[in-house]
Image 1 (cartoon, helix red, strand yellow):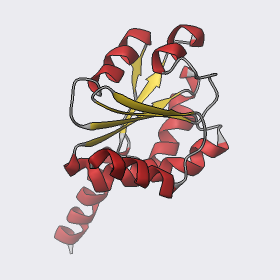
Image 2 (cartoon, rainbow, N blue to C red):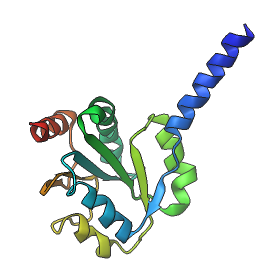
Image 3 (cartoon, rainbow, N blue to C red):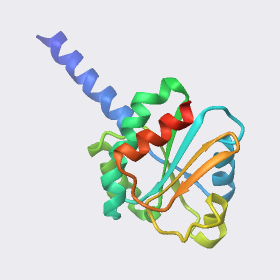
Image 4 (cartoon, helix red, strand yellow):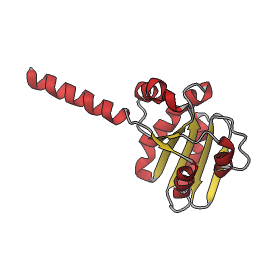
Length: 161
């Protein structure tokens, strides 16, 4: 009985540790470096900009997590860039990540000078979220809208061809 209970708690703790990642903070330069990973690789990089207070972001985030879990072994990387205020990380973002069992890589954009880094992502971006950039080598496509699951899968599968 004790051994079963120990194994259960070990499993639960390891699952929480996997999900309860603490987002690394990045600034404009860190974002540029991150975005360039997609240019230097034959892998597919999906960058999604989101916040916990954005209803469309919350609606679509599960699709990105599903892609991450199903396509990681095919060279697909999902990177979620959170835009909540810094003082909301522990109160809102971390509980959100745990509740939705997010295992994709999460960063927190600490640079509040949006006009300095938004054009780094895409010159056409007004700053509205959700926003998604998909990049493979020099090919990239940008969406300033909520993506549904079918759209996201179609995009990823087209890049895998």
